[in-house]
Length: 315
Image (cartoon, rainbow, N blue to C red; front, side, top):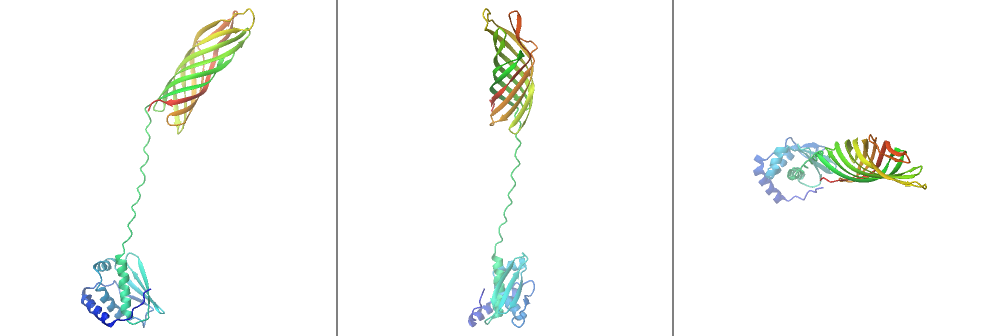
């Protein structure tokens, strides 16, 4: 809210004289000032003359702004108040309210219009915020060409006729090509006891298996399945419980094909926990004999299974 100052005749006369000198090349508004409800209060001709005088003394940057933005002015007179509104091509409007009381109202309004234009001219538009570039797409993780895993586990072993059972331990080395095909070599040591008529038989079965698997992985889970050939030895030891019966020991080789499945879960990038189950059929079977009869044999199948902890040994 700007209140008109009391007139000062000498200062007003001097400013008018200097302004008239620059009035010849003063910039002008695009169209005459629009007066709304100002009849009898302001003269359009007198206002245009006063506005031309004031525009003649503006700074060069205000002059350039008038030529560039083509501002327009509108006055709304309501009671004892005049609202000055300046609109430019940039769409920004500046409003200012003036009291109608006091002498020199026409020049006072002209000054208010010019000051509004000058205020808009020195405003700096906000700097545009540069767009944030989208993050680069994630680079695909290439499949590893070759991985080597060393695993150690324990579980159970069973099979044969009559059916026997016991524990088993395994140490395995697995080479995985492009996370799809793997070749594995394992060493397994199983053992158990079998109750027979004259006593019991203790069996130890070291073996080695060589095989190939196909696998598929998704995130932290992996499934593999394949075939292998296992060869081993059955070492029997008889422990009689009846008097007059002597226990004997012996060993016999065996071999046969097998099928196995492996369910693996990643604990970390280099460690996995695996569940391994293998089922095989002896084509060369071992048997234990005593008292002139066959007491036990390995066929028709054997089953190995257990949990394994696998560690990646390649970087």
